[in-house]
Image (tube, rainbow over all chains, first blue to last red; front, side, top):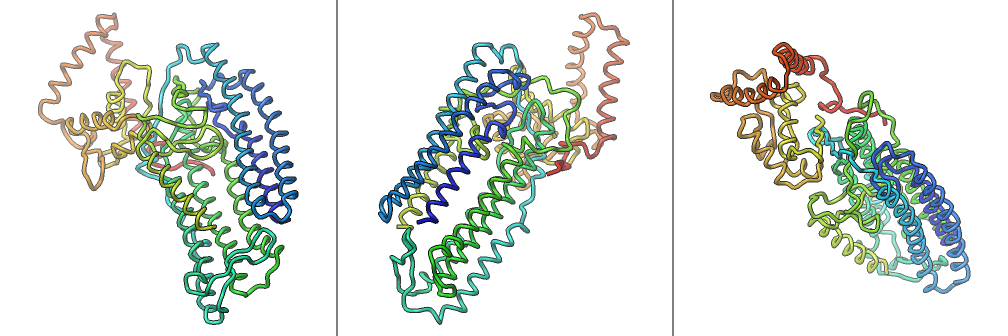
Length: 372
Length: 145
C-alpha cells in the first residue's frame, strides 16, 4: 500500500507540475487555446491570465494530491476503497486543470473579441509539401531495446517453463498478497510476454501516427515551424519507443517474480514494476517539456527571413468546444494538435475521428475487464 | 516547398494552390519528376475539403504540369527544361498577358517600367532555380533537435 500511496502522490504532483508549466509550453499564437495574431502575444491581459492560472492550479493540485494521499491511507486495507481513490483523484485533477484553464481561456477570448485583435488582420495557412514527400524516417534503432527485452523475456520463459509449479500467481492485491492463481499453461505463463508485445506494438504504432501527423505550421513563421514540426515528431516517436522499452522492462520484472526466478516482497514488486514505468514516463515528460507544443520550443536552423509573413494564423476558435474538444466536419484530419498541453487530440467532427474514439473506448473497456 | 494560402483573399483557395505550384515549378523548387502530396494528404494538411485540392490538381493535370498516378501519387511532369510549350499554350498565354499588360498601361506604367518588372521577375525565377538547391522547404530536412 505504501507503494500505491507513493505512486499516486508522485503522479498527481507530476500532473500539477505539468499543468503549472503548460502556459510556457504552448505555441506563441495560442495562449490558453485562444488563437491570436503573433504581435498580441505580449498583451498584459495574457500575462495576467497566466499568473492567475498558475496561482490557482498549483494549490489546487497540491490539495488534490494531499486529499488523495489521505484517502488512500484512511482506506486502510479496504480493497474497494483502494481501487476507487486513485481514479477519482486523477479525475479530480483533470477537472481542476480544465476548469482553471477554461477560465483563463475565456478571459483571453473576451479580450480578443472586445479589442478586436483580428480586425483587419489577414489570415492564412502555410503548408510544407516536403513534410509529406520527404517525411521523417521511422527510428527503427530506437525500437530495438523494447524488441530485445521482449525476445529475451520470451526466451527466459521458454527455458523456465518446464520447471514452473502447477499454479501461478496471477494477481497481487494492494498489500502485496497473492489473491489470484491460475493453472500453469502456456497462455498464463507467457502473459507478461504477450503484454510486452501488445504494449510494444501499441506504442510503436503510436509512433507511426505521430510521425505522419498533419502539420499545423505557424503561418507567421512557416519555415521555422516546419523544421520544428520535424524535430517534434522525431522526438515524440523516439520517446514513445523508449517508454515501450521501460514498460517491457517492468513486465520483465513481473515475469521474473511470477516464474519464481525472484523472491517476492511488496517493496520489491513495487520497485520492479513501478520504477521502470516511472522512468519511462519521466523521459516522455522531459521530451514534451523540452520540445514544447508542436516543437515550438526547439531552436532550428531554418528562418523565415527578416520579418514575419504578412498573415496571422487562422482564427478557428469556433471549432474548439470548451476550449479543448475539436469538432470540425470540414477538416478531414483525424488527429490535430491539442490546445491544452502537448500532443494530439481527436477531431470528433471527422469520420475517422469518431471511428478512432469508438475503437479507443472499446480497447479501454477490454483492458479494464481483463485486469479484473 | 512552402505553399502559403491567404484566407482573406478574393482568389479561391484551389486557385491559390494551383498558382503556388506553378510558381514552384518555374522557380525550380519543384523540378520535373518531383512529388507533391496526395490529394487527401494535402487537404488534411491545409485543413480544407478534399475537393478543393482535387480541383487544383485537376487544373494542373489539364495544363500538363502534373501527373496523377495511383502508384506514385502526384508527380510534376514538366518544367522549363523539358522543352517547348504544348501547341496552343503560347496563344492562350498571350491573350491573358494582353489583359495584364493593358491593366499596367491603363494605370500609367511606362513600357520601360513594365519591361523592367517582367525582366526582374524572370530573373528571380532563374536565380531561385540556380542558386539555392538546399533551400528549406525544397526537400532538405532542417532542425537541430
